[in-house]
Image (cartoon, rainbow, N blue to C red):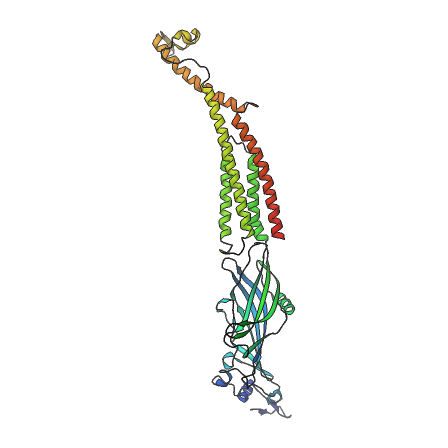
Amino acid sequence: MKCVSVPLGTVSPERVCSYQDVLDHLNLTRGNDVFTSTRPVLDHTHPTMVHLDVYLYAILAVIEKSQTFVPFIWIQLTWNNERIWWDPSQFCGISRVSVPKEMLWIPDLTIYEMTEKDDGPHSPYLYVSHDGIVLIEDEMKVVSTCKMDVHKFPFDTQRCNITFSSAIHIVTDIQLIPFSNSSRVTQASREVMQTQGEWEFLDMTVSRGKLILDREWDQISYTITMARRPLLHVINFLLPILFFLCLDLASFLISDQRGEKLGFKVTVLLAISVLLLILNDILPSMSNRTPLIATYCIVIFAFMLLSLLETILVTHLMERDSVHQETGIDHAPAYDCDPGTPLTQVPHFVLSFVCRVVSYRGGNRTEEVICSEQGESHLLLLILGDLRAVERTLALFASGRREGKSGYWTRVARRLNAAFFTIYLISVMLFISLMCKEWLN
């Protein structure tokens, strides 16, 4: 012990002590292997009791695709070093000192679920008390694996474990004891919580157990329970798919005699396909149970696919009816346009009107030419052919506009469309109700 007496004015001298005086008294130096090489016990049969306390600072990430949980935790370790002791009264009341971690033995605790080493800065010091109690306080970013159940995504609750145990020391060497119970850890974590992001922290439970293989290790497990905030996924994913389904239902109001309905349904179906690709990037590749959101998307996709196939069938039936109507018009009575037909079958006033050709030059009438019988026949056939095409087009248009005189296949298509819409609407309502019940149960 080195104490220095310093005169204080003209009064009695005051003792001045330093932390180095304590270290010199203990012979605690970097090169002293007594404090670093073995467990700090005087009797090897005495286990080292390590008290552990863990608080949750933040939930940095929860990655469902890779089943990864990344929390930021605060750790406190305490144990007794039987080789350290001093009387604080002999060192000006100094009851504890801080020393570098390299100067003392430290328990080789590891986290079973940890998959990546924490490269962040750590505190290089620890506290040593006069009675031999050693204290380490540190912060750690833990990249760990977590078995997640995404069956009710995005209304799911996840539970991830952080298990501490010694790497090589068995239960007769090191025993782990939780410093705080579950309620105290949960309350302290809520008070110091910095960020939660998409997840809401619910509670944190502490349990002590043993790992038994060929030997037996003591371990402490912290189970973090958190619930997902589903609002973002509901707005960005579930509601758009529901809106597309409503658009598909509304497309039954579009006329089946036009191609717009078929094109509209194909466009909505492609939009659902894009959302399915986004879902594939979120959910894990393997899961014990099929996620409800995958069932939700696939069933709605199937509904819209059946609706598209029904529209194709209805359009085909109506087109078939139109072909029958056009065939009937082709067999309608018309003038025989064969070149050998005698012109006496054509009304005289039509023939005289068509076959009289008047030529004008410079605005003055020059001559009048009367067509021969052969020229009259050829010109008349051309005009009658054009009139026949116009008549056919007008007949088709009039048949489509005529009320109460739809063809057989058109009537079948309309009945099929009405029946399918009724079944489609009832099925969609039942499915949405069932999905909501499963999600919120």
